[in-house]
Image 1 (cartoon, rainbow, N blue to C red):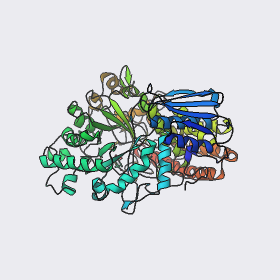
Image 2: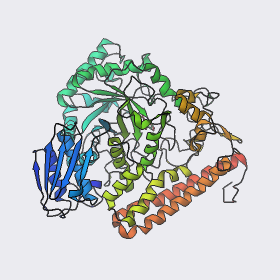
Image 3: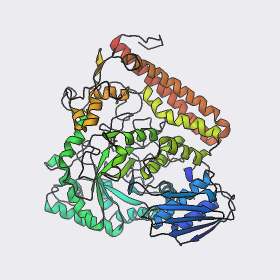
Image 4: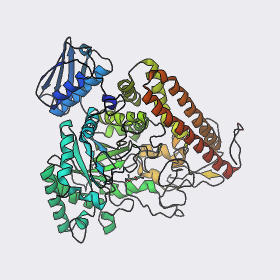
Length: 639
Ligand code: GCW
């Protein structure tokens, strides 16, 4: 049974059971059941209302309208999933206090593929998971709590997510087997749970599966036997799961094999699978996270951010039409601040997916508060040309919005209770990228804690600031990576400096940063001229990305008049103070909060404060030791 406690499994669609039995009429479908279920648990304010669900041929698939009038609410949609979205949209509006007769809405998703990628392993662990164990796998096999999975499906569907990959992109031999007859009956059962909620499954596959599972000597995409193996595999998979969304592939990436390792292109690698999936309407999601992870740190010519563009841009026009190339939003890897990948929008003949990360891998691991929506808003606003930004690419070149999930089997799904807002925000922004971080965060707070201004205003303020606060005590000005290697939590300024990963800040005693301009690594040249000029020039480069693009002396004067070094000191002191003020704010909310929620978040904030102090002291000491220059304000820096 679902946990009905206020911060348990129901999250923002949680409910308080009531005796209210509304009249719900219209087409007999799953959405109608969901509507009854939701209403019966919502309260008894509007108990003389009739809710009617109807299909309408005028509405495109998945879109819906809500029309309230005294005593009546009509939900119309183009298909049953649209009705379901309409039901959730209606329930959300009721929950935040709208009266039925004032409800009037017309909603249409901006893009048809709104996807969550789980990095779940068959042993039940979750790669970069900070919320407990996998919801799908346990102890070497498919293993889940069906009621919990249904709650999860409802949660995802309520914000419009309509595809999920269930296994880690780092596919092992065990998880490669998910496409075999041995495992498919169980995978199909998961698909059955998600199907009524309008959610289709994706399976992550292994590039070498023809070898590992098919006993063929090669995985060469141009080999007929390999093509035949993928075709037969697709046919088998679709016999069990006729509506599978497709396969997901991480190839030629971080020690994984791929077409490049046998002299083939990424397009050749993707197309052989695309052709196998085509008869069944499936898509291959082919990740672009391809770079040299064996770089010698002494090599200053190779520049990791250039890699994805270098590999993929020349292939524009060569990918089949059921290939989505899935591009991480930044050219590095989910750092607290990066420019957008120059690949986004660069290929006019290739369908693209924008990959975001909800899991807080480099951004506090769901210990530190970090509202990802504020970062995503910036990503969407990032220019592509002088008159187009990334948001404008959606449903044009960008056909899918994807994110790495932050969920697990913790009672509140996301470890940090407030990190639920990030899952919520992802769904809402994928549905409607024009929404702001402010809007979606407000919605989440209202649905979760109610919209009393005493709670809403301070909490909203704290959540919206959280990313900038985290950034203050981390690596400065877009340089990234000053983090403990492997587990990625806590400071280690030189942690990645002499490693193979291509992630260097190159600080010495006078300067820091990498020159990525035309005169440097040439990375800026991958952007369209407008963006190129913006970043090429120190004076127009957004200050928060200065060290991503430029190598600068510590006494370089920022626009505020402070030196670069003083900026680093100041922000690191401020970061700690800001976390202290978060704790004060949270304490002031204690009286309005369920005890359970208060305690849970308080513990995380206390841990965040320790983390922020550690970052402050390690980073400030590092630069003090390099430069010998003290803080202008005479604050304590450890020598
Ligand atoms: O950021 C890196 C992570 C890996 C991850 C990889 C990827 C799934 O540290 O854990 O592997 O990105 O995106 O493939």
